[in-house]
Figure 1 (tube, rainbow, N blue to C red):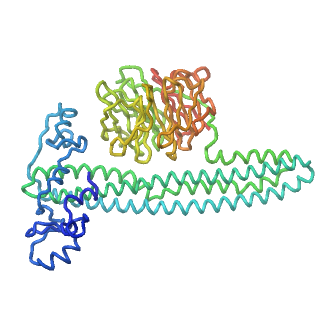
Figure 2 (cartoon, rainbow, N blue to C red):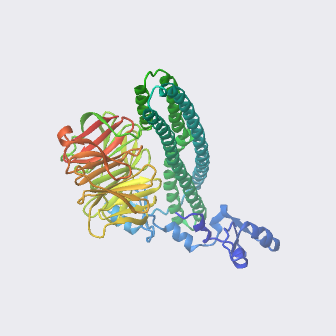
Figure 3 (cartoon, rainbow, N blue to C red):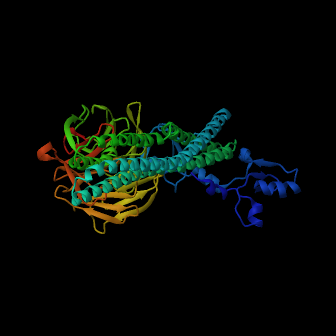
Length: 598
């Protein structure tokens, strides 16, 4: 849909164009002069000379001249922009061009273009819904903008709190340390001083860096919210004007198309508002502030703890524990597996063994799994029992979150490659649209309005609207890029080269930052980045799950293996913050493995 700047060229002020050589948005049309004018030119020039001429404002656009460009915009198919809308599929309530019909609606029975006269009450109802949703978007936009300012204030407050608490701890530790240092050698004294400085430096820097990263993530999310609200608002305004323009008895076909586009857009906006308004109005700052306050409260008791120490070894032990405290509080330490369970994901309608290629965890702890073998996406409850499933046209490869209740799934069939959007509503899975692609698609990840899709030979960047932006990384020869992932802050992208058994870390512009290889990373398959930045990778042939450092340079730990944990060709991995567990999907296995971690 056109934005504000796109629409100016359709009806611009003729006086501004001729006299000032600028394109100004026209607000009035003079029937006698057959020209459009902005408010200033209309008041100061036109009305001064031709006060009795009949003028029409934008509320009466049906009396404005025929604009071929505007009609072309209205008739343009949103999916195939080079085609005009010709029919309407009643089975799917969807406007179609000839390409849409041949690709997706050949079996539909009710495919016609209903040019019946629209009732005035129906059009008026659409006008009212458009205006209501435009006001709601503005309110949500203001809420996001206010949240960005609150985040900045919150960080400065946290910074002061951490500095103050560290100064208190430092003072207490030095007072107590001095009484013990009299009894120690110079070497031991220097060692204690070094340990104190190092520990306190780490506490302050790790705390503030983690707080800053959290706030940057939230701020980026809010900025995306502002941009999305502005875009939706412009699109609704454009549709409002298109409906006004087409609301005439001589434009029945245009009016019908405009009405259908309005309904579809209103539905999208209302869904977006439902998913985001409550979350933002309740303040995204609460979680950040609560975590910081809990951290400060825990530190405030350290002075009392230190006073109970009786020897140098107690101080050393205390400082060692203190140096790891922040990492534990902020969940950046190594993942440690402390238990395992198995759960079946096979259902009676399955025709073959399950092949779980992707896993997503919803905010409430429910789990979505992509079953490649049975061409299904399955919803599991908190006890990992299948409660709903949704069939897709081909084999699902990968899956990622779009919103808290919508996921995108890459699907490949014999001649079809697409991203299928699936929503979770009232415990059931339903279709939420799709994006057709001209290439195969394996991995997918979404981050703040950008979608990254791997297509075996390249990593491609798409816009939110489904437009190909650029190729970020491409092999010169034919190689296999299987899955992709993105860091929580969005500054790093991770891709896996299947035949080379490599994990590549890329900058946002596609520059290679690091390459990781390991004996337990043979033919890598699944990859996942936790909200805290922990990078988990499946070694398909080596049958292992490993944790890699966030820079993508080296293995930090082996979390699970075939010999120790019974892994069988792991294909997908996902971390659940809700249950503090790692969920693993396997090839040709009806069970998923759930590892409890700490």
